[in-house]
Image 1 (cartoon, rainbow, N blue to C red):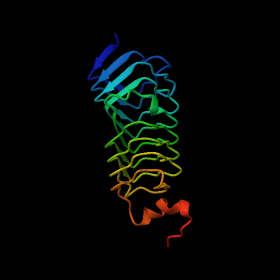
Image 2: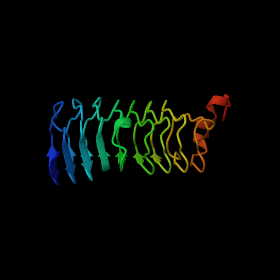
Image 3: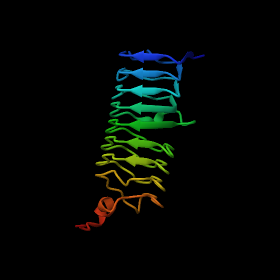
Length: 189
């Protein structure tokens, strides 16, 4: 049975490899914490907030994220694809998620605001109604993704192949339309 922690604030902690394993955190706030050494196992976060935390290179296999918000966090090279898929609800504000993976996840309605999403793997991901607000999507991969009603209007540097990605009613800016035409070598001026 996992250890249970409710409504606790954690500040300036550097977590060791197995320190958070087999624990459930509910309504907790983590500020300036470093999880980059962690190899998560059977960890649950419910209604938690992470402020200015580092997860880069952490292995988050078997982690449940249920209504979790990340603010100004560095989450480079993290594979979310191995997370618990039951009630997977996350929000990212001002985060660096470069080289992370969301492969095959259902993240419908997720919000990415002012995030760096360089070379992120969204392949075969359900991005229905996802908001990409002012995000850098340079070299991110969307093949076989479902991005119906997704909003890319204020984001930039994306290259999405509409023949390989479902984009019904997705929103793009007129300036960003060239990111949909790149494969056809069409020049838009």
